[in-house]
Image (cartoon, rainbow, N blue to C red; front, side, top):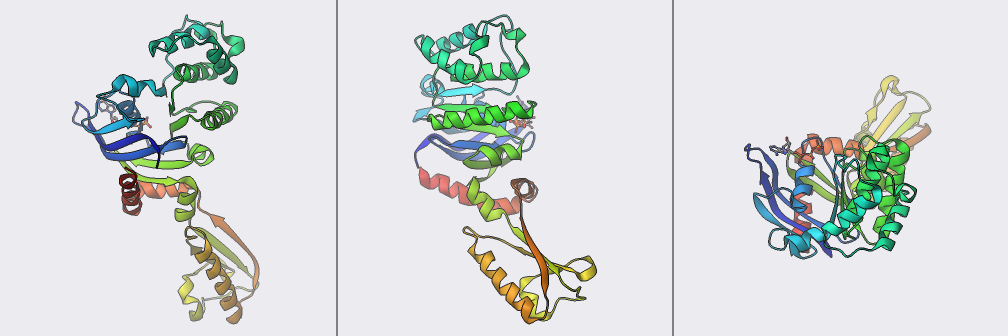
Length: 329
Ligand SMILES: Nc1ncnc2c1ncn2[C@@H]1O[C@H](COP(=O)(O)OP(=O)(O)OP(=O)(O)O)[C@@H](O)[C@H]1O
């Protein structure tokens, strides 16, 4: 795997004695959109802050494009753009000066043509001479993104990019993030919004209580853990499930007119689908006729809730993820 960020056995215990990160191993692939999901206080911001050199790790190491964040701090930091959670900008500065100044901080020579393209891409060009305090919250957020990209970093961290923004701006942000990825920028975003991870991410990491409990391709995650449910509407109600159908573990609905079959799809979905064919045949054999049937799939939200609430379920996948991360090194 071509990793742009390699995080190894990373731990952070704050001066208060609180351990916010516990031995995190994670490799971020070059050019991907990686979503870090987790409940409040899980350690997402701490992880980003360590990688960006804002917080010192207690143990472990991080390399950004081959540069160690402690030994080669400047080289590592130059590869990173960070859009923090809070809107912090100089109120009286203009948009243009704000981005020029940020670029200069990284020792990059001025490049007005690049900054013009950047502001245009973020729909800020017409406001380039506006002072920050005259901008709406959504525009300020876009300026923060422009600031983070002003020095042409290879990696962009977005900490809760759409917290508190309206639906329209959220969609704009998603479009922008995709465009950045298409231009070769690796994007790591933290989010509470499952919908955001589901919509945007190539891969998803779930963090809870300082531990990375799962890292997976989004599609594989949905496929692997996204159990399906088949509901059969019966032509005539039944009072009990015939013993011949025991192996399917069916549930009889209230009134006896629905049967529910739960199954895991497996990586390619064949196992469940072929079982359905058998089930329908066995139902017919038992003299049970179906009037209608439909399937539903667990959403990423259901998966997330069960992962955070049932660490045992995650443990197995977490160790798989850790093994994959190890193997990649
Ligand atoms: N400077 C600090 N000193 C002591 N504890 C801290 C400090 N900063 C964060 N913590 C604690 O570490 C834990 C992880 O915090 P962090 O901000 O990384 O979580 P998060 O996943 O980003 O949460 P949120 O989604 O609420 O932003 C929290 O319990 C928090 O209270």
